[in-house]
Image (cartoon, rainbow, N blue to C red; front, top):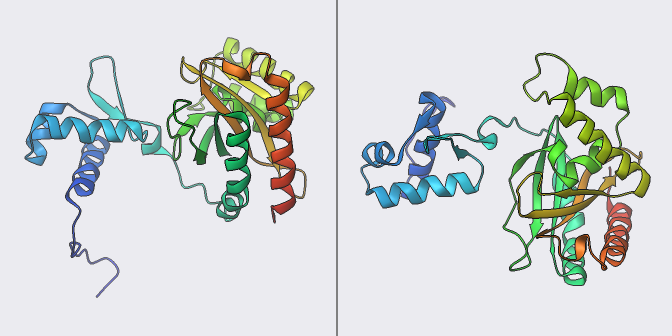
Length: 254
């Protein structure tokens, strides 16, 4: 059998196949509505809606102002192509779990790919935040993103965000806001995001460094609302975050 020959799976998963078909439709046609999705898949509108919402949850689709479903950030995200990301996730997992227990909030591990942050792992505390695993988020609006970006020199940041013609170019005002956040991160060792990515989410983050000292990614603590992340418990939370980082960095092999 040639590598180009397509064979239907022996045990198809209908929901998965239907979800993938919706991704293909949006990729090729630009958008889709619930009624069109139901007709295309031959299912009830309620079933099509559930599939579309699942794809929204995982960032493959978003809804535009007309309530049509269009491509989300995960649809166009390129392969990260970093061989060490799995090892980083494994090294961080037990320390993230312990950190969540100590601070009572969810923790996340992310890496930067160009102007985006990819969430590799999450430890969820019920009522804190949703599961961010697999999310593709704009780095300049997240605590983890700002933590990683703070490790880059200013000329590199200017080239990333102010070069004409780049798809992720930000306004001058947004870049100034980003640089304020980066200045804070460089001064304190940690970054903060308050409602910049999602209105209800507050997060703090720190960079995770490899043996060469370069930032491999970031670890964040997130919650709905300010909670202890910006209140009286902030000093304690940051201390636990920094201690968890120290333990993870001793186990990182890159």
